[in-house]
Length: 188
Image (cartoon, rainbow, N blue to C red; front, top):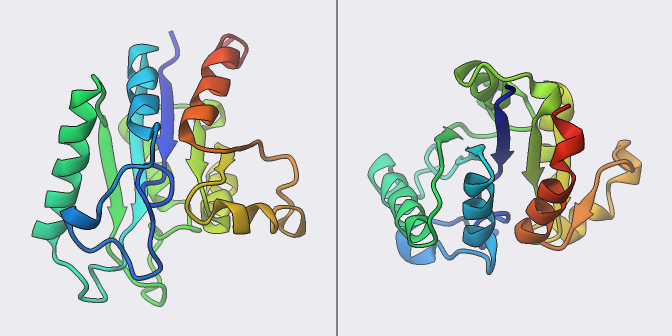
């Protein structure tokens, strides 16, 4: 039996995004339908991991304690919907730090694949930015774009970046419903 693993970006996919960064639990607000979507994945037997750039740490906008509080809020709200995140990976680095974990680099996605001993070719990564799409391509996972967060702007860049084949959905719930309706074909 192949593990059914799905990887999600956080800001703009699960919760509202902000160009000023999400800096506190009060600013962490779920996108309507996103928590239900994760619970649906859990109930369908999926392991759910999150891969998120959190350069606000290196920029001094918030500290690890605050990031943990944001994630605790996400987990608490998710549990009210009967869902859970099985692993949460974040990159604390800034864009000029030269790490392999910051998307568009594939480091976090590779780490998640190793943690769960997953064949990344059978894994979806749902994001809202070109860096998410590039990380997915570099890691060999299947990219999916949502129009929430920065997704509407990103959709305009897909062709130019050789991602015309990427499925596009209005939000996480719509993407998840599509994946669940077609999952029988994916894990043959």
